Length: 391
RNA sequence: GGGCGGAUAGCCAAGCGGUCAACGGCGGCAGACUGUAAAUCUGCUCUCUCUGAGUUCGGGGGUUCGAAUCCCUCUCCGCCCA
Image (cartoon, rainbow, N blue to C red):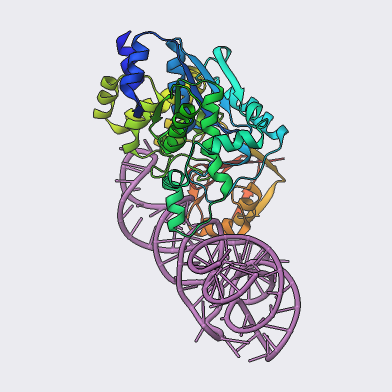
């Protein structure tokens, strides 16, 4: 089983603090408590979240106790990482709803029945001012502002709210509360994870080991995957969307996606990447779709993709729209189709030559189109379709 | 508490009385090219009943024939002094 431990310590991992220490514990077969925190601020997980969740699942499969921590309290404040604004406070009802949804989604890679699920509101909400002072006492201001994010903001004359200093303190205290042996997070979490070590020590505990995971870039290939940048592949999306979005990632990301999101061995990955990039990407898309749906759905998505994009065929599930028989100016049809966000955009798209009817390009706004018993397929751009049928 | 500076479209950022729907960059969309991409080239990127019109430059009020640009006030932010 040694190779599994090695795999655990290497794959997708950027840094372990302290590696030798963690490896020793693992080799001795000690059952460890592994913490991963999630702020239940939205309701959707994407592939970026799965990187750490998959690592958590790896620990779980080796028999360790996995603890999924929901930041029900910290979620009200927001991690300063990558943000320049504080979060809108969420209501308890929203938080609960998000938690349920997250659990269901995490279940795609994790065995929830064996997972300990906790909320930090259970202890953080009960602390009194004395407790808080004790906690705050474990850090100095200069240690706190060492954090890259704070440095950045100071440099750019941006505000830092006092409350934000408490975020790492609270996250660190969570590790005390749940007696974490190991905490996972993205590389951008390094500071908060280290705070956990420091605070555990201040509370007389053995500091946790921390493991930072590679950050997954989004579909456009430059910035990290995030919902607000709209470059994400959502865990709950349809097999068709997951497949298509995976196919649209830049080639150079394939290796990383394979490593972080599939179980293929390095050897197999290298072999795939040595072949035709398109085939490698098809394989990647199929693996990821299988993980989030099943093999059958993945296979179907692949067929569909090849048909629509490689052969220029039509998707099998075009939305239908009923219209009274008769002639319509092209612009009217495009507006009615709701494939454009505004009428102005509809005009532009026609002018750009992005509009086709039954695969024939038209660029006159007033081009008359006859709607009769023959259904007409309107296409805007590469991937938006509507089928018009006469009533 | 006092002084100074700032708030411009999704983001960054120019403009500082008319020619401003507002330079430029990023991002996004479309077309060409492709392997589905990337890179590259081209066009577009507030709305509408679209060769014209309407609404935008933190909020409100004012000056002016005319304001993103000047004045007053409010809100928010940063810096410096206490």
